[in-house]
Image 1 (tube, one colour):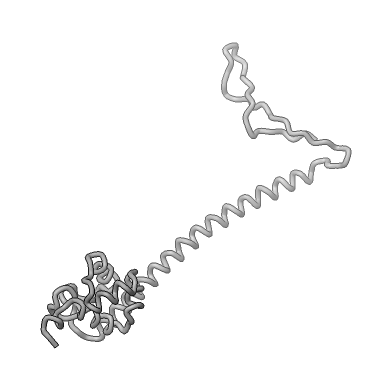
Image 2: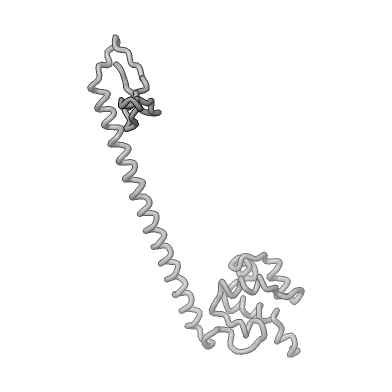
Length: 174
C-alpha cells in the first residue's frame, strides 16, 4: 500500500468507523449526516468539511483531532487503550442520567404546581356548588344576573361616594 494512501483522512475515517464498531450508515446517523456523505469520504471521493468534522468531534470527543485530521499521534486523546472508549461511554451515560434526573425533577415540580392550581379550582367549584345548593331553585324560582354597582373609594365633589359598574361583579337574583 502506498504511504500517501495510508496517511489520507479517508483511510482514517474508515479506521475510526471500524474501531467504533459501526457501519458507515450507523456512523453517519450518529453524527447527523447521510450515509452517502460518509461513503464518499471513506471511498476517497470527497474530503470531510468543517461542519462534518465538528459533528464527529462533538459526538466522539475521545477521538484525537490531530490523529483524524493529520494522522499524528494516537487515535484516542489519552493513549490508545480500550478502557478510554469504555470510560468515555460510562461518563457519557452518567451525563445523560444526570440530565434525565434534572428534567424529571423539573417536570415533577411543574406537575406539583399544576396539581395545586387544579386543587384550588376544585375548591372554588365546590364552594360555588355548595352556595348554589342553598339557593331556592324550585321550578317557580327565576334567576337573573344583574351587574352590581360597587362603591369605590372615589369621592364626588359634593362629598358623596361614587357608584361604578365593575365588569364581572354580578349579583345572582333568585
